[in-house]
Image (tube, rainbow, N blue to C red; front, side, top):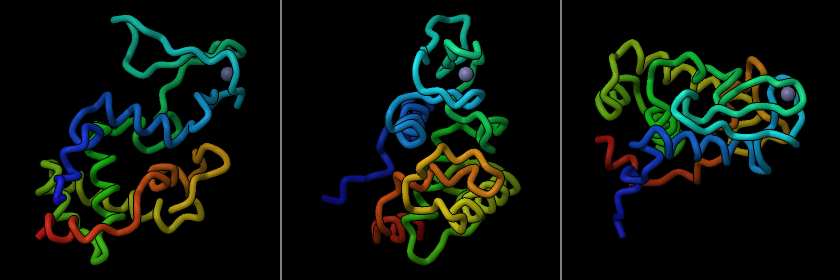
Length: 161
Ligand SMILES: [Zn+2]
């Protein structure tokens, strides 16, 4: 039963993480961040496109699920953000940047910045409940990440020791 939850694909695989984020941010299908329309959105396929790229049939804008969030320009893999968020939200005792550094295999400074962003997102209004609108505002830029995080898991406290 101690099925290692950290072996979930979204915690180790960039594409799986992106798909996971898409279901969190767009539970009813992609919404254009430029013109806010939800219809005529199509996913672009092929090698010439970045993974997870969408195109809007109204404004012709292109976007991915991370647009408008801190994740957009982050050099850290999406799966590390997903995992880091999960760890921080699932732990009842809190997770330090030092622990994130070790578990995620990122530089301490990176871990520190991630921890700060995730903490900020958690303290925002949208934390822990699915936002009605995609969270792209300054304060809720990562809020949508928290929507998919279950209640604290004691397993994580053990895993982080
Ligand atoms: Zn659009």
